[in-house]
Image (cartoon, rainbow, N blue to C red; front, side, top):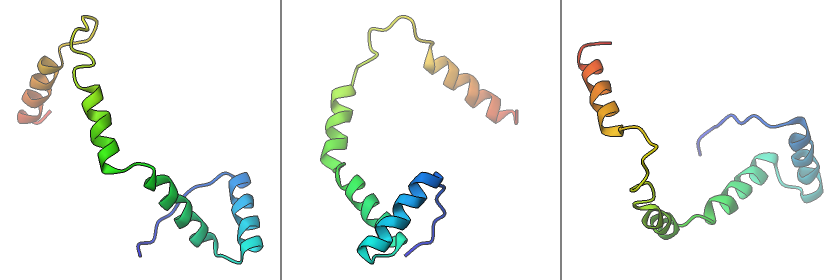
Length: 82
């Protein structure tokens, strides 16, 4: 396991503390279970499907900047150490 620091509101911390007392589980275990459930909602297939649906979304937009030109300028600046 990897140690990780997480900031919670006082209210969320109190809820987790209460759940830990009620269930006999540790706060860490409850947080891991919550993350597992949340992440489990997003399968790789779903992510690919969302990306396919978004393909070309901004294709016909005329109000957006020229991203290729911005990228070229940033690349030029990084080559010159700016």
